[in-house]
Length: 564
Image (cartoon, rainbow, N blue to C red):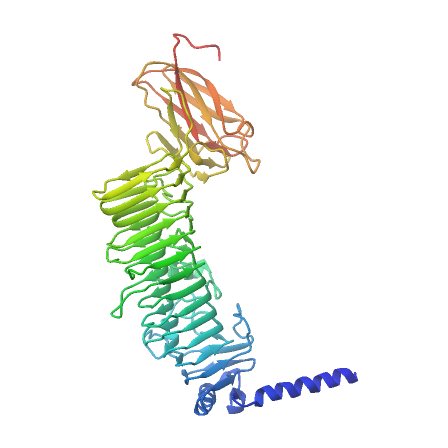
């Protein structure tokens, strides 16, 4: 008991020493209540001004819920500091929470907090208690920088309409580390950075809510922009991420100029456009180890480069995935380079859209993995220079070059199976009418698929069907084969039924898809002739999931079929 008492006295004395040491001001000493009811604006500003009058220091905010009905200005060289030593999550009404209410309905109003030269916001949570997910209201920027060397460290802004503005006024050498937020309209805006700014460990994510019924998800997919970057001088951006926005990273030209910078480990998930470049500097956007996912909206594309772009974009070791329409659509006069990148999913609706569509400018695609059996690259007439080399295509090579410029294409490795000379092969990647489906089928890459991918459907009553329709040019008998890949989940049908419609009627054959993967399975020998029915049909009326992959017809020199 004596030891416990001595410890308590020691802790109290140490807290008192911290609270009273020179250069540290406590908002409680200036009348702040922290009860979430009383307006603490004047108490906070009095503490900040007193600290600033002494040339700078720390204004400490103990645990509590501080209602700020107005706005705050942090003087030069003053730090407003709460209790958090790392960016918190879901922490409104916990720790140090500032409740912001001013400016509802006016996105151009006075920011909630203004940072000046050398000032810092650290260790706090900011929450807008009057904001509702089913009725989003505009608010001014939560934090605005106004001067060089302002910093934001270990801060959570739960539900800001606009989070951080480092662009309306010059903010050179700004520093952000450990910022979490769910911005509803704009996340981080940077412009007028005339000396190197640094941004790291930012996470824009549903820390408030992702309730689809309220409409918040669709609101963000329609209006949300996570990172907006204008004029910068070698911005250093490290480990930043956003989820669920219409635009992940947007690079723009302002009256002050355009961006260049070093972007390492950046990510944008569940977007419509993960990376949008309207313009950038010739020095370049150096983007390394990024991950970009687009599937929201009417036209999801991971990278869009506008006709207004004049600068250079270099992407290295980046991953692009998710059910998008395209990986990149490129225009403008600049250069874009993809080096050692991984393209995992595009042409989600099978409209024969290329992964990369370059309509103008210069393009380099080197050492990349195209992990879908769909068109890979399209080069338009206005492409000046192009290098498409040393890539790996999981499917058949499909590069369309209409450029009138200097384009080099070669040394690309692609999927290839040597088939018999006059064989007719139809893969699931082929367009209608050669291959089509009815009902809901899903893309699969289980391993061992012909051409690198296949489609699968749940077992059912035959409402889902896949059709292969070969074009017969020579009358005669053909050996008909089917191909399907591996069964990693052990749920393939053991009695998948194929219907062969030939010149002599309809024949049904049962195939066990739960074994003998990744090879041709002979269905039998059938008679076909031009103009007569020629179709192979698979339905989901089976005891497990069925796989639609490839069909092959091999002509045989015989006048009569064998006994199958």
